[in-house]
Amino acid sequence: VQLVESGGGLVQAGDSLRLSCVASGSTSKIGIMGWYRQAPGKQRELVATINNSDGTTNYADSVKGRFTISRDNGKNTMYLQMNSLKPDDTAVYYCNAKIIWSIQSLTTYWGEGTLVTVSS
Image 1 (cartoon, one colour):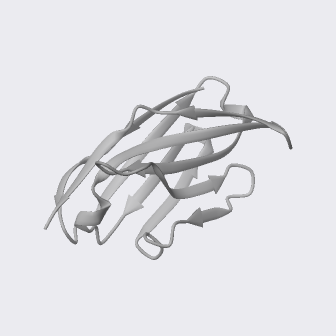
Image 2: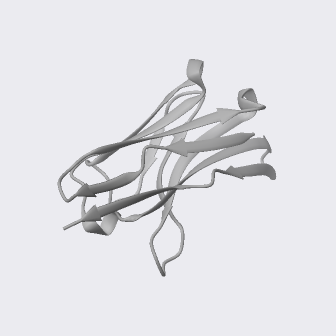
């Protein structure tokens, strides 16, 4: 599975951005996709996930009510709509996909990331 992110950029606080992640390869095997982010000097953290079969979503508390994750399985594309952006949202955003082979076995894929910078 290959993942390519796009949509990052420089915005002001309060603005919106939409990130996209296009998946290719063995996409039919993907069980869960998600967005993670890593700010300078910090560990990578979960932003949001979406279950590819039933659309169930999960969000970090810090983005609930502001970010929306969605996917278009026909286009093999996942999105992250980010509204009311804050300077603390500044980070490299990574697309993530998991193939779940069994309860004890999964494979994780990462994109190369797209930078989001929010100025105050």
